[in-house]
Amino acid sequence: MAEPRRIVIVGTGLAGASAAGALREQGFDGEVLLVGEQRYRPYELPALSKGILLGDTDDPDWVHDESFYAEKNIELRLHTRATAFHLGDRTIDVGGATESWDRLVLATGSTPRRLRVPGSDFDNIRRLRRLDDARDLRKEFTEGRRVVIIGAGWIGCEAAAAARKHGADVTVIDPLPLPLHRVLGDTVGGVFRRMHETEGVTFRLGIGVAEYVGDGGQATGVRLDDGTEVAGDVFLLAVGARPRTELAQKAGLELSEGNGVDVDATLRTSAPDVYAAGDIAAQLHPRYGQRVRVEHWANAKDQGAHVAKNLLGAAEPYTASPYFFSDQYDLGMEFRGLADPVTDELVVRGDLEGREFIAFWLRDGAVRAAMNVNMWDDGDALGAIVDAQARIEPAKLVDADLAGLAG
Image 1 (cartoon, rainbow, N blue to C red):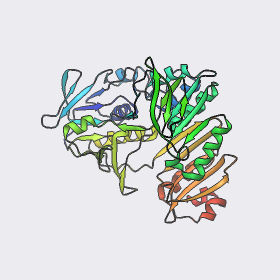
Image 2 (tube, rainbow, N blue to C red):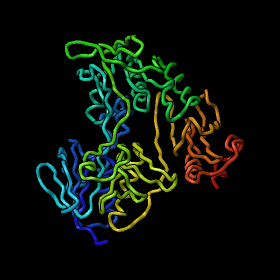
Image 3 (tube, rainbow, N blue to C red):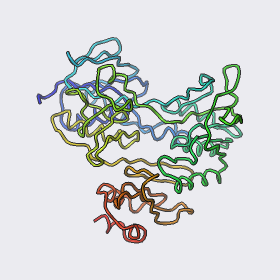
Image 4 (cartoon, one colour):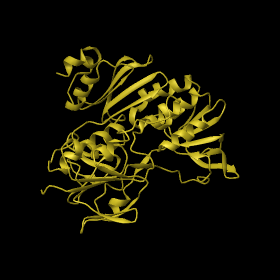
């Protein structure tokens, strides 16, 4: 593989900016163009649904200092859209110009999903993906304001906690039977439901939204599938995100059944010298033997840094286990691994109702995932256990020293 002289990275989020920074850290002295549509320099997303909504900060965690890009000779083009790239002559159309590339990284991220129901275009239906979204939404979270959140996943639950902190009246709607049900299942999902209800959140679970109702361009409520209505002043749609694969699809890259861009273990796409990282990368993961696409902070950060090595000639597989964290009220948690809460065996260590516990999910006797809730001493051990998919008897997971079990 010839040494590249020009690398173009599409996407100015965490994955793209991490890749650009890692290229310089590894001594690459060729041209780096980092281009994306957002108006702010690259930032991390977790604060949007945490610190900013809570009012603890006005700014996110910036990936790099403002001076970093000029100091490292990284050409950063903000508010610039890439419309197509061409494999034949290795060019890409960006902002009305045509740029050449020797290696190309797609780190275009994801965009919030929409509900295809009547009334979806009302002005006060919010989504949370960008910095301005978070700042604007926080202004809506005031005492007595009726906040309706559609979706009881991580964003929905964190937003509910923030809205309640500001004294808003919060209702959360989801067609699943419990919050966070797809990730945590019945038992642990029930812990989160009871916590939110104790804090004053009203849930409408096991039911979907049929339409928004309102007039004058403003929604005043949502009508549910059973015909009942939930009135509100502001509506947050938090029903997940879809990967932004339009560029890849237009170029003819292989997609993962419409859910991400297929990449091999090294994050290389089906086209020579084109890689993908972050939310859009549906990786053939060497640990799990299946395609894995993760939309969390750690994955974007770590895949971005990892892909830089392979852009420069390495062929190292990305092997990290998925990781994410959440803070809601006085509950903090970390989740490592990949589980199916419907079929995997759940083992709990600690006090479930006191919200100080570790949950393990086992499959065929091997630990596939672990989540520590308000218990912070065993993070490294949990990471080692999950990475090794260690086979440990449930009784030992409950009582034994976890560092010893991690080997």
